[in-house]
Image (tube, rainbow, N blue to C red):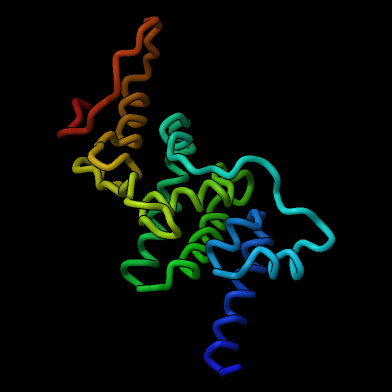
Length: 188
């Protein structure tokens, strides 16, 4: 066994350990690290089972969630993008580090579980067999915040939240007025 292979394998095992500690499913750990399911089962899942349930593979969860969840997902996405683009980290190491940093920012009750963060990373960057990116980071022209939207979208959730706070009125209409589009300076 060459020293390079041994070092790569040890790094993959450490990443796998970190992923398992953060609640990752065995299949997700396998995708991130490249280790086989058999290897992971024999090392990490002997005494306990992997997280059960359906593996999330769609970005629909993001579009159907609250502004708080979208804001937290955007925080994670910005951290991950910074590590990948500006610091040129490898995807697996960037993902684990970004999720750890996300958990540090939301220690009480994070809204973004490990599996959802993995799906978000796949759909933002087209990595780990995620196919072409379906989501992207967009920068609001008004408030300069970066947030996740569908490719081609431009709804700024933070600006929308500010507008709702500024007006301090809650509409009792039964029909929704539609999404707020952030296209210029707000009226307040």
